[in-house]
Amino acid sequence: MELRRSVEEKTFIIITAAAAAITSLLLILIIGKIALEALPALNLYFLTTAEVDTPGYGQAIANAVVGTICLSLLSVAFAVPLSLGTAIYLKKYAKDNVLTRSVRFMIDILSGMPSIVLGVFGMLFIVIYLKPITGGLSLLSGALAMAILILPVIERSAEEAIGTVPRELEEGSIALGGKKWTTIRRITIPYALSGIMTGIILGLGRSAEESAIVVLTAGYSQFYPAVEVLQNSKMPFGAQLGPFQEPVGTLAISVYHMFQFPNIVPRANGFAAALVLILLVMVINLSARVILWRWKIG
Amino acid sequence: MIHESQTESSKEVHGSKPFSKLTSIEIPDLPGLIFLLCGIITILIIVFLIGFIFYTAFPTFQSQGLYSIFGTNWDYTQHQYGMLVFICGTIALTVVTIAIACPLSILTAIFLAEYSPPRLTKVMRPMIELLVGIPSVVYGIFGLFVLGNMFKYNINPGISSVLGFIPIFRNLQPSTGEGLLLASIVLSIMILPTITSLSVEAINSVPREYKEASISLGATKWETIKKAIMPVASSGILTAVVLGVMRAMGETMAVVMLFGGQMHIPGSLFDTGYAMTSKILNDIGYWVAVPEGRSALFAIAAVLIVFEVITVAAARAIGGRKKWS
Image (cartoon, rainbow over all chains, first blue to last red; front, side):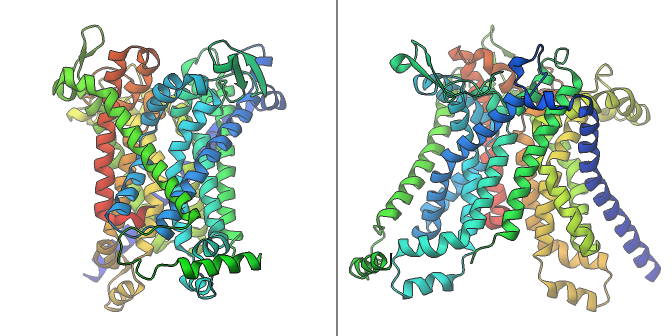
């Protein structure tokens, strides 16, 4: 009996340790393999030239790197006011009743929404129906659709961060005569700021890695996003505003091109774009982590 | 600034309503109204989004009736839009993915939470969570270009030559590596970190006393895990699994590259198939300009939303919102 128990214990340890080893090796294997495949194409020319200045297809990715950053920042800019406002209202103003619970349920539904659903919505409504405003497949369309995707990400972490503010601090402020808004502005938000920032940065990472929405709403461009005004008789006032109303190239689509045109895009270049995208997203996610650890206010 | 806040607070004294608890609607201050507006806009966006999808999909449901769900023929020229093949493809993909990911991630979580020395956990948890940072399109090309040939020449023929007498292990598509198994394995790598880190949290949230009581009664660690920890942590772990299901169901890019995209229900692990998300992505670019085809594709999106809402409701019913946010 004793023997059986100890054998059982040992077996179980071995099984779980093996599972853990496999899981964590996956990361090293996947990134290592991608880095190895990417090595031949990784050079300064590849990283710092726009695709349009190269002779072929998929030869350089600088336009996509800039485009990815623009698209992520713009979508976060759209999503932040709405999501923070919603989070503060739900946490600090609304009472816990059927209404707020159903609001949270809807936000949960949005956060689990398959990105392809947001993609087709964006394609039909934002790209086609709102074409006079968004300019069709464009940076603006992509950012609007992406803002819907990351809204629940930011909202949830903001709500969670606000929930960690000690009651005593807020009660102290109110006891000193602080108005509700003063308390929120001076106590709640500064205390929750690191958590809120983490949510925003996670949203940034989420929008940098997204591909299904981008391919349907932002299109692809071989040029750098440029500030310019173009003549376009189909747009209101006959003007098309760059970069907002023009298609934008993104890294996710550079990688996707490798699947679409496997005979045109060199294998190493596709993997190099993938590696750059992974590193970009990981740097973003890591900085969220660092902020959460190091930058606690309060 | 002090002066300003004093005047604000004096207003508060007059403005605060001692009887406000009696009335159900409390009128907030100006910033509160702005936040309320944000909340209302958010809700309107969600309602509009879902309403728009169903509105666009409605003509298809109207003309096809139940055939839209249970029909197996999808043809734009014959005006027949049955999505059973895609629904079965998505379900098969999700089931196999969960079957692969669950044991691996839950065992990993048990190891990280209970057995591994704290120093190792500190290294391994961030490493596993970094896997989240690999975009799905990268998983897609990794699966296609790196794993594809491996599956075609080694894994698929290898497994089916040993286990081929069992119907689900027959190698139905020997000419390609793409198929149910490849797509599911890549998907399960994608959802591993989610299930693992949420399960670790669920196990860690089990009160220490339960564990100590069990060990002081002479139970081994494995018995403690089996009898004391798992029953308490199970709802959290189940929520994690449901979240994984959601992610696998909605994944588009990797699936479109790895599932094969052939119009039939997969007959074995090595057979190709067609998922709902892939059908939408492949066809929307061309058919978005045609009202009928577009409506049919939106019908798939509508059914996906229904699946997703059911999963969210399940996750909430099991674990509540707190555990998985």
